[in-house]
Image 1 (cartoon, rainbow, N blue to C red):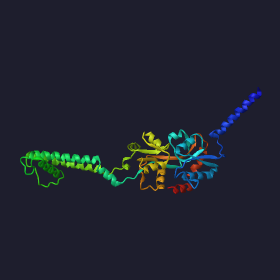
Image 2: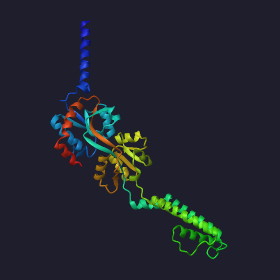
Image 3: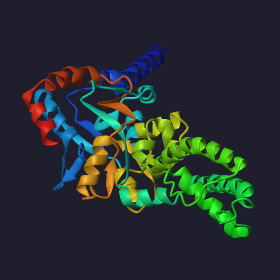
Length: 356
């Protein structure tokens, strides 16, 4: 009986010891670290079979002081990487992962090492085509039609009074109506050729009313026509996240940009990465691509699409990139002090200037 209890006691101790070894709180720093990455130029990219980029350089600078043994584990997308971190498949990730409220419930983060913004990319617009589009828009056409209708009404009223007593200038029938229209038009525009003028009391009263009204109408319609001809671009129309609802929007799956779109109930399409999103813009399969601004700019420049695709100067929010860890990882407290120290060095400034 005593042997049986001793065996159970040893088994219990062994089990507790094994669980302690598996706990993130007791991670052995002498073991090889598994660092999760997914290609995200210019932060993480593969060059000649080796990883490079701002995030890679920052980690190598940190590890010069920590001297940890490590290897990279590559994931096919941001969504897969985040799941891998959450499920303890890796010890941490150095990818540019934005710190958000939702993500902090799933994982831990280091101090931010890079400040970014959520940007909006779109195809560049031709000013000439935008102008022509507004010129033949319904707003412009309707303003012209209203103007012609008002001119015709006052020309017709003058003709009604003048057609009998001033037949030589405002004759009967359709010809007289057209002459009334002509008089109304030249009076409104203050040209006033003087070839036609009302002579009856009723005609002159209508003319006097029309002269004062024409000043107001021509000013209002001129402003309206000028407004309709003003070239309105997406740059002018997008001033907030809510304005994105007017357009077809695309974003990267599981990105902080997608979290923002979901927060404001903006309908959008999903892509795996920035390459697929920029390709959709290039092929005119989406109107807007919302993602991290530095990643957007790098991908556009890499493809040589600066003349075809642009990033709007207005950004949607500020983003803070940090290393990401499984919940309760002891590595956070180990890496944070070193990271903060590295951010103050000249070497870090050199790395930043390299990717600007």
